[in-house]
Length: 198
Image (cartoon, rainbow, N blue to C red; front, side, top):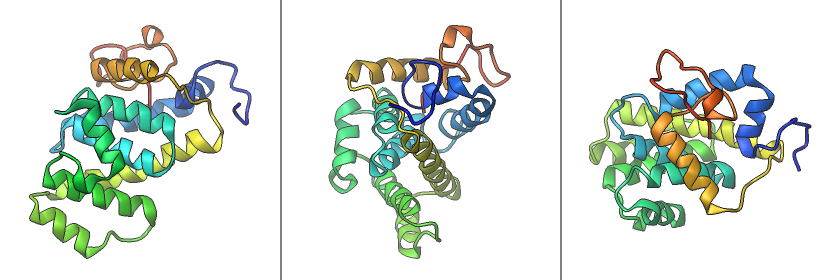
């Protein structure tokens, strides 16, 4: 049971966003920018970074939501996500993405400069400045999202179907500001009503 009265039955961050649409709007805008806008990393790769950090932070709602979104957009689908959660070193992902996940893990672990070794390893696998920047910012942002969701003890759906439906909304529509996508007006960066789900 959440620590605060939300006035809705939505789980995870969806309940928090429905409770506080004023803070939901910038949080969803950030998620859209980090995970959906054009970038050198694919949408699936960025969702996987978010899911991996969430898994490391023991935040099953975010790990499940973004893991499902990653699975829907990556070769290997759920098997790839499960393999990364078990340990990126043996997961069937590119060496570049593996090196970037090591950077994400460092960001999640300490608020200090990422090690020169991790940066050098990522560059050796072809990571560009934009890849490193986006990885660090996604990892840092998801530490915030994870703590928002976990520290207020929000409800966590146990059914895998919930996360598959969330992934469908995210892939089709992105991240929005309300609990029900049909009631969210279009934003200047979206062509259809986006759905939240961080």
